[in-house]
Length: 440
Ligand SMILES: [Zn+2]
Image 1 (tube, protein in one colour):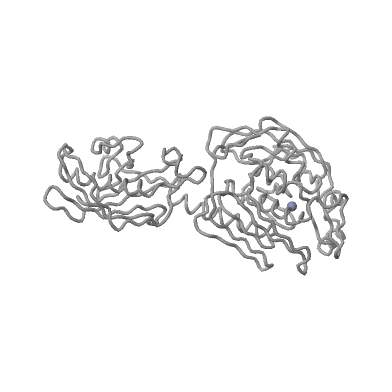
Image 2: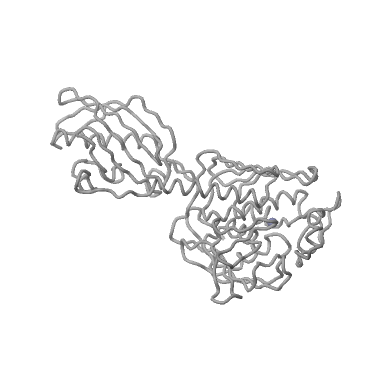
């Protein structure tokens, strides 16, 4: 069941799973159905009139008490995290999770049943590219209960977690790269665990009717009570990692980054998911394609190509947005994963080469020069680049605004331009360029 990391995936066919729900103790049947690209994961309540669906999105998160509950309107689905963890980690981006109750089957308290379900259904690649959240700057969330989650840049999705019970009992640490194989082997079999003092009040109030030693490990003092022995000496921290994956799945994107978690819980996991979504919204807002003027003031792609001799894959300007003056203009280049340079720079961690940004600046500056000279019968040769600085990586999906200003021209043969590139309102690179002109 190979998964192509760059493409979206769904399940190959419908598969189902029956069991007991944790909180109500009712019987529940869950069916996993294929869904089209960009659909995401949606839960469907087959037992309700009109069979409403709920998007597995952080905006729909309702409560994080002991388990993760999502809802829309009055409709709720409880304890979604183990199913979501398995879908995300096994590579399923799009699926409908149909249930005839308000909670998926708890199984043995791990995600094992969901891994088996996904393997029965199969996983199929779709044509659309996956959406990623690339961590650019370190982010963190902290809670009053002592939970701390830090997200660091990384070209893989990694989780390093420290778990500690009351009075630091059962302190455990584990660091993994989350891949389908690692998840299936190291994380999915780890069961839910509870400390007796925490669940006693819930048991007294009859709030966990489906709970038993069949689907959770109970820790009482130093004693570990469970139906079958521990599956790993550090099973608890593994389950904490499982819950982190399930809760972060609510961002609806794949993460390239390293989560460092200390004593995490559903509440802090949800806080990190919200912080990621806020950052993603901010990025999308500033990178949204602007209405690009054509005709008055700017140049469209055809006009750019009439001026510049460059062609794909070396044409680094899509359009000129505007000419502020005769010597100053702004060009735009949308960087997509299809740029040939991403194949080799670098596989698995695409970053736009700095020299290509300098080339983009040179092309925008030459447009100014050609316009000023009112001729394209000469070729501008790039002579030098000074004060070159690369401040931030440029990634697939970014829109670069290329600012160029002619600062000096000596006779007809030499010219200097001051340039900088902007992505998401931040300068990503800058340079001072010098050109000479030769007749064709
Ligand atoms: Zn859990």
